[in-house]
Image (cartoon, rainbow, N blue to C red; front, top):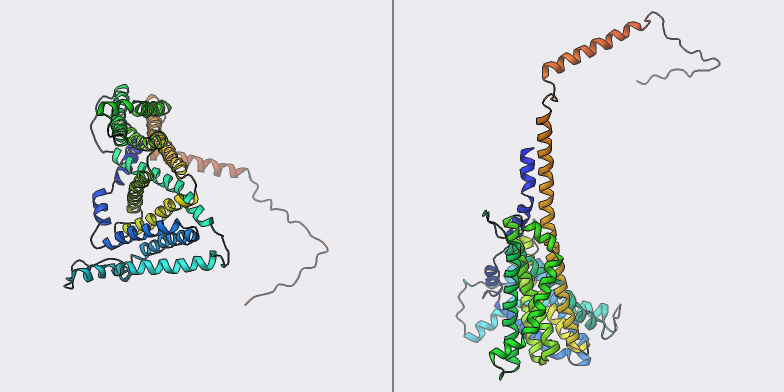
Length: 453
């Protein structure tokens, strides 16, 4: 019982340890993604995404561009799945140990040979899509259907961004510590409000200053006050909504520490997306600024999604995503994301409305997952406390009734012997001389007995 109680008592700690165990190094993953052995892939996605973005603006090439983005995503997805094969791995990565003494231009152009296999897979996928969904295909989709679907996937990428970020945030928040300190929930909430207010005002003031270079720094901070107030109100509303969970977490230092970190990191991310919405509504940024911001957001989303999938892969025996093929998966996701952004600018008349919906979806996703993680941890802790309480009650009941004990082996043997004797004595009442009457069955012809050798 003791071991079970102890094991149950640590269930919330085990859940926090599970969150922390997913904290795969961002630095090591970043080094893998920008390794010189795979650098041509990064150049290629930059070039092809730019070209396809330009061609998608032409009405006659929009559908073809959407197919090209989709095919490139599929091609790199196939490359990622096949990268465990030694031959495929050699085809898509460079061997830095080989010395190439050819001229500089030829030497660098030769490095793009690692892009041949993904491009071949993408080409096959492209013609397969034409055969199936082209104007003369088996299932013609018609112009505008695929671009519309790709553009709408921007909302899906927003959900991926929110879930991937919260996975990283939970691992960062779950720091293993054995310290036991007194907790003060009200002070922690006040500290969180101060941090979010400071970060929000600094970010908003920066963009107000960029929007109007003649504006003074004090004026920029003054203009940022309404936005800062909104971010603080969102934080206060979220804390009030999750007050019961945070109050329970404050009873243990480690849970309290996790709750504070988790809340601050999530609301910094929420503040970023709220600021994007605020700018697009009130500051009227140029299309170049919007696209530049979405490009940065795309890179961040791809990177954090790769991190999330890589961390998940490390914990499973089935590892479709690891540090070796992380870049290929990232490029597959990157082409799909870039295709969505490109289709937004061509299919939808008002690109900003769709992007605003995407940012709102991210905010909602983070708020939902923020509550879910807190509820899961507190639920585990409550379960552990309940099990421990039952164990203690069982111990107390045994202490109060010492006469209620299990019989020892000698008593058990004596009891079994007495029981057997009593059962034999009962047989004396049976008349053994009186044989059992056999029923007489008349008029029945019996078949002869068949002997089987």
